[in-house]
Length: 472
Ligand code: NAD
Image (cartoon, rainbow, N blue to C red; front, side):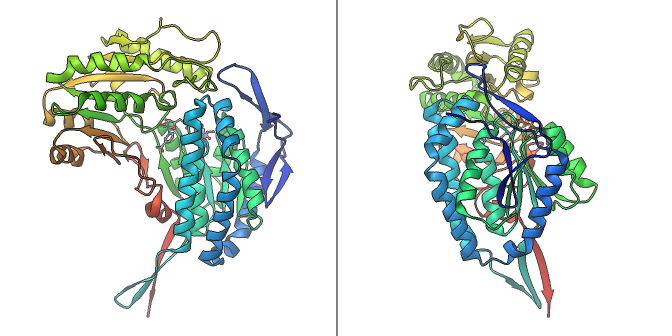
């Protein structure tokens, strides 16, 4: 399969990028170069934004039913590519194929489907006294996305932006651009008006900065690290442009003393190690009532053993490599530091066996972690779980909230009312009680330094709308 790409997508066509330079995409399992893509430039961003600006009025005025129909065509074009998308994510990111099929390819289709429906039924004008309050598309959207869910993170922006009537310029992560190319093959097949959807691949410092700072971009919608989110906020602040930020997390999984411990541990470990721990919502701090703590640590260590690292294309593999050598090295440093800080290694660690090649880290569990230590405070973004004892519900809430992040979390208890009381007090954008399933229509986003704004469902659509009051 030849994965190399030579063009960028501008104004409804594939065209060569202006820099003449390329970026290499690496396979994290084999460490080989997988393909090259064009390295976009600030000039490419200018051309893409100009195309999007020119398309804005026409797309904003397109009847909702027609915008919904275009999204429906995109859904059909992507559905035929679902297997190729799953394989490509397994190649460029290393997600085990089974998970890639269900989550990396499947979830974006679910999200897109929800916006086919929402696009057809936009918020109705509202009467407030002598005012008519109408919602209008915010304008040209610059979307900047990370590598860990390379299609889902894009779809969580692209689908609501298009549904709302906003043209988009996308800059995907330079580590996983191949999945974005498959999306744009589908965009091309679906037939949007020229300029409504544009792709400029490239690095953060070149293409990302040019897009975030561009005077003609009305909203910068970003998913990625908190450090980059801060930089993008500064760039957008110069022209008072809107920003939507989906950033990092250090989410707490609170296991109360009356919980079904076996289930709580099994689901908790699965959540922490999903996508090799490269998941912003990962429950990376497991907080367990002291009366069940030793029992829980034993169960966690056993569960972690089931996540042997291996080839993403082997159906038995549950843990692939990390995305890059740099990411692997960062995660290793976190583990070394956590052990030096007094954590107790109960699974994995620096000496656990690994495949000969590839950017692997063993599934690692560290118990007795100090809630103020680096491991409990910093996002690791690898398969590393911190286990922390807590005295009672009050203490669990205090430790859970002892974080500059607030993206996700969980509570387990035999008494749902008790679990809900704890969930309500957690300063975080989402909490799952007793392993409740993911809801693609529920608002998704962070408190504190985990972000600004919400994605998914009608809350996600709101991000791309302005509000106008007309008095009469
Ligand atoms: P990152 O911040 O390094 O990169 C994200 C994107 O920003 C990439 O496309 C990158 O090229 C671009 N970028 C980098 N520097 C830039 C700059 N100066 N100006 C403009 N753009 C720039 O993050 P990452 O390493 O790709 O992703 C991992 C991070 O993303 C983790 O911290 C994770 O928690 C977070 N994340 C958050 C969510 C969420 O929804 N909250 C989802 C997924 C990932």
